[in-house]
Image (cartoon, rainbow, N blue to C red):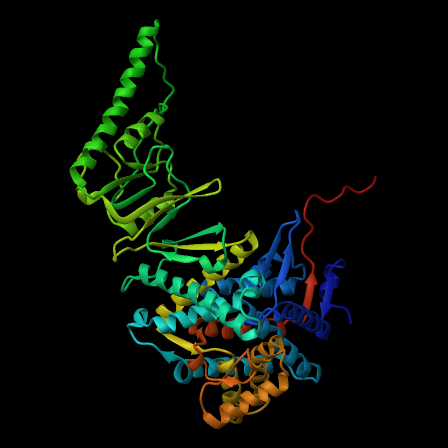
Amino acid sequence: MTSSLQEISPNAEIVSKQQALRVNTNAAVGLMNVLKSNLGPTGTLKLLVGGAGQLKLTKDGLTLLKEMQIQHPTAAMIARSATAQDDITGDGTTSTVLLTGELLRLAEQYVAEGLHPRILTDGLDRARDACADFLKSDFQVALGEDVIQNSDVLISTARTSLQTKLDLALVEKVRVARCEHGSFAKLMFLSLIVFKIARAVVDAIQTIYTKDAPLDLNRVEIITMERQSAMDSRFVRGLVLDHGGRHPDMPKVLKNVHIMTCNISLEYEQTETQAGFVYSTAEEREKLVESERKWLDERCRKIVSFKRSVCGPDETFCIINQKGVDPLSLDIFAKEGILCLRRAKRRNMERLTLACGGSPILSLEDLDKKQLGYAGKVSEVSYGEDKYTFVEDCPNNAQSCTLLLQGPNELTTAQVKDAVKDGLRAVKNTVEDKAVVPGGGAFEIAAHMYLHEKVVPETAGKTKLGVQVFADALLIIPKTLAANAGYDVQESILKLKDERKATGMAIGMNCRTGEPMLPETEGVWDNVRVKRQSIYLSTVLANQLLLVDEVMRAGKQMGKPKPEDM
């Protein structure tokens, strides 16, 4: 039977009916199989190789979907939708792809037996709504209004996110080898690294938090350095600038520092319009140069006298200017013991006032001490050919900070940086949701049993088949966690179900032992909005693809048509 479209477009390429569903299902399952091995703390890594030979090690689903070249239209649509979830919630990319693929794989069996896809989609929608209500009313753990002070839960949430993105057993091989032999010693060392980075992430969120205001993660500066190891990464209550002073006689370390953040010109400037100075003798030229130099010297003297008026006996002064400073002006400041940084980045200027206080100075008229910020210590550090300026020990009411990430090579620092960004989003979600969800597959096991025991008996007719498909598809998460940890999948799932039925508590899987655990005791927490968004998005994708009965490549030809032969 030919499609009606071929009667009006004979050149159209058409895949119809059962074959269309099979094509869509194979694409979703294929993408699911690519990402399945990366899920969880025991997931494996993927090595991405670019066209110019660039290398990237990652187990982050978002990075994989963005970097991979996906040509199949169905797989590309799933990938774009999953990456959109990451833009909204910051996590859940891999889980969404896995759940979508498993829904289509299980639904295809019923469609092949003659069940209409519309009946299945009605059941999936009913199961999705019941699952979302179960998450909101019975399963999530409320944290109260003072969640920002609950450091234990926030650190556990950050650690859960970081452990699924980092594989430090590879990047910290040298340091682990120095520990005593045995998997336990190795595990404790790696947990210490993740805990230290998680603690830094929580400190950053607590620093930028303002009550009744949205959290702005742009206030957290992330600086990477290729030196030492990931264990040396730390939180800086202040700012780290990726450049230093431009004069050899300027001080390298300052204590009790007044910070002057300004955007004023302290160098010769080009005129905004086309203009020129006309002189007929060398003496006239010298007078022009002297007058311009005199103008700059007066501006520098204003700053020097301002410094003398505000600084006490044990106080120092630092200038961070967005515009340029010429060498003679730098010399004046160096003789006065002032550290001057020029051509600072605009984003750093904005963060400086948030971290140190004060306000940007745009004019040297009416200078006031209230316009200055304060830092306990400013130091210039050189690592090889690179210079960094540390503005540390800022006031307790600082609204900006820095995460200094270190590692032995670029692959390590890039992996840690991607993981830290996800960790920041995870803690941010926890603070805004004021609730968390037990992790380790606990929610999927509980929702699966809830749907089978409560929702399926209450659903009449063939619609309950869609509910069963949704309930069984949820198990793809704990099954994958068990498979990636090297344990028997069926045995692990049965243990989790039996423990859940016996205790009625939230039961997850311990990826280190393969046994049931209490996520609350182990400190394994997931985000509420990530779970909710993953459930909704995967169901919408599966429903839309199930209702596709024809895949057509029948668009208009691009470009001018070829002229017919005469």
